[in-house]
Image (tube, helix red, strand yellow):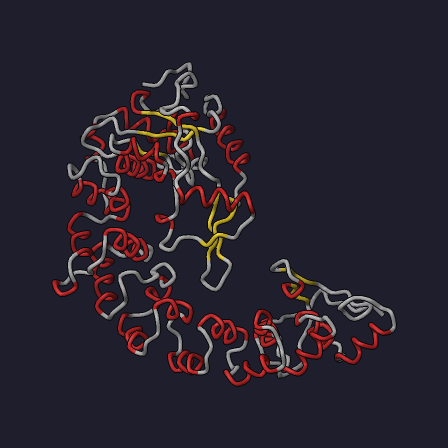
Length: 464
């Protein structure tokens, strides 16, 4: 058991001293370098299970074969942050924490990037220290990556943590780190068989099915968390001709994670994976980007897209909406992202109208903004020549003013891209001038997303 006088084992040395640590593996070294340099690094495909994490550290991998598993840094400071203080000392170790603190942020258009963690690590540590003090524990040591091992030979550590969460939820001890710690104390105070006897549900069924199978294999834990047993995985790996999904183990996990989000049973989830694979969706399809498509549509709805030669990536961009329109834009030479951006900006815009902006010399980077605000290509050109962006041109138009008025104001010596004396409400959705949304009303009949979404300009108060 742990030492009541030193529950965190502050006197215990790390399993591997910091000076003896091998270099970071490429996946984590790339992230660390990008965070240091300010690069924008695309996130790996395949959901959270594919993100580089503690399991990729060589020192962790060396210990995994002996049944040791790291507590996820994404969970530290939440429900598992206090567990090491009550875990049996013989089954608890720590390493210097050298993981980059990062998160994955989506910037629309189905693109996600690795960026610094939006949660301040110092605040997370502060909150965890407050929780520790609230139950009479000293604050946990900083910069430790904890590793736990199951004290029970017949129970994997991943299964044991799920079992403890089940006990926590069943007993209503609370969903923070204190509740998890209390549940761990109660579960570990009993016997292994008593713990298994109280565990129910798909995760428990999967854990029982895997029990005794590759007991030291950490790859089993994600399947247990999904409620998938060995038979489910065998079906996902079996060839299509034999009624399976013909996926690699890594691919099967990504597909399974997507289907599990829909709240279906493991049997139903596996059956849906097989159905999607039968219509020709490739094994390496970007299933996380296709998640909404597979949730809203049936395989029979999507099969015509694949038969028409639409790639899975383009299918995700279009979200399987209106195949004739997607083909029309493709035949006009637009890639799917450009076309989707333009049709969201104005659902009625045609490829021919979009090409007119190109002919007018409007940059493709801002073309959709002019479409969304309902300006013609010639008007967009005139405003651009005055260094007035689309969101600002809307303000001039709302006052019945045009490019000539803006030019006259500039020639009079009054600076600025907005009409003199304008005071109005605004909201910013990004760092660019065109990311400003001013509270103005567009003229009746104005096309585009901006006019469709405009409301009462409650802050738009012109100054006399």
